[in-house]
Length: 117
Image (cartoon, rainbow, N blue to C red; front, side):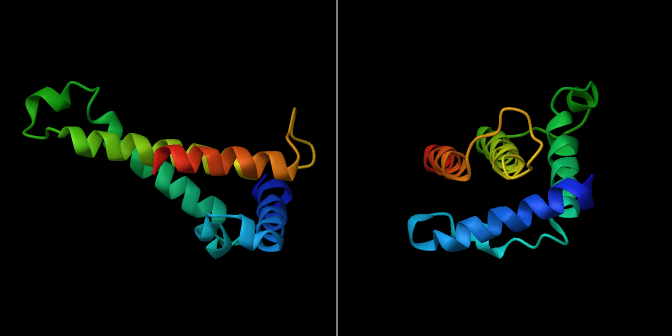
């Protein structure tokens, strides 16, 4: 799936973002690498899941591990941004169900980013 769908989708998304560079207020999109995209998303999602799951398991109550409000908010924000980024990229998969046009997907992503900064 990575090589058939995600890598080409990232490349299409990068091409689209680069062509609209002056209109895209999300410069970190241009720093993505289609070769390492899925591995980095997989690693980051596993890290977020592992950290956030500590707050719902019984171990949370038997350890000294207590997340402060800012830590929880940051982790949830990071999760939303990761999912938003995956959502944006998914609209560049030609066989994706109910996909948006590249411009609509980018507009939605930028709107999400502006609301979560």
